[in-house]
Length: 486
Image (cartoon, rainbow, N blue to C red):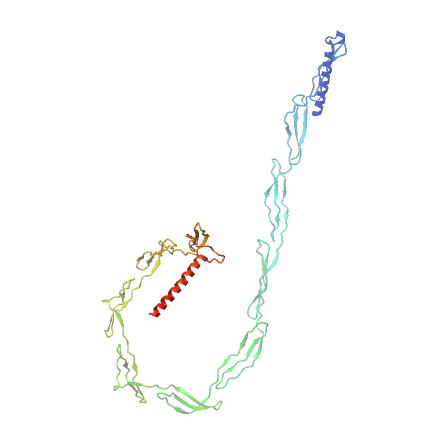
């Protein structure tokens, strides 16, 4: 469309150019004057929405023309689209628009909307025993009642797994079949677990019976169960010894120390038997007035009474009864005094309530302070130049406070002197040393002492010292000789 309009504009421009050219040249029929447009070749034609128009075209008798330009079609002046038939979920709709200029009407289809499905009924899962149902979806578009889903889901049936193994029965205890549970989530179906009756024992003779004698027990036969894994046994009960069947021929009465007996022969086994028929009588002790009892005291032993048996006249000697010992009782007149940190205490005064002996109070040593560090007054470590403090303490028994004590400064722990600047003939040198504890430094000046050889020994002072040493030795020898001569 844009290209076509540009073409029309170019044609009109050429027409105007020729017209101007013609005007410029003048009309030859009018002696070069203006053209006399007297003949109207065509009238003005207005454009429509779909067809072009043109301006009126005039001719001069000289053949020149003016006008006749093409006017492009105006195109439709459409209104907004208006829906005449609304689209549904499954059918297209229709909408129209009208040209305000020519009244033409244009139609176009509105595509079907399609269903807008939303979940209406949740899925019903199938269980082991009951069918389920697929979810149901409904179209939510106005006026549409389309629905889908809801198909039946068949029941799954149980998925059984063994949860408890079978318990085999024994001779005396019931068994139980294996228990199976459904493994599907939410299903608690179970089967099995039926009781299996006990097998009962199958007994077989294992040990023959043993008959009893007069003096030895017997035993019934022993039977064992022969079923696998069973160790049940029965029988083997003790049969009491028969005992002797005695024919008595001698009787002895009891004394203080010996029992009564009967002696005879067993008619079953022929053994001579002595049978105790009554216990020994025991001594019948009587106090002997010649040897009375003596009561013990707190500090001295006593004696039991002397006795004799009035049946066999056996004498029992007197026995020592240990001294009782004191029975101490606290004396309220002399109560105990508890010791303190600094002062001794006393034990309670006591007396014996049997012999009235008095026990004096004894001194209980002072406890001494139990010092505890006081967190409010911690120790302060001393430095090389500043004093420190010991920990503060208090006694947790009497609350006495021990003041902090001053700890003297440690003093510097100087290292060796190190030369940092050598001395010269005109200027002193400098040496420095450092404290190994705090890092403080100290300097001193060093005077010139002569030439320093490679060995580091000063030659001039050494020579002076050697000379002085020789002179001193010489003087000592002279004085010694004088002393000997005198």
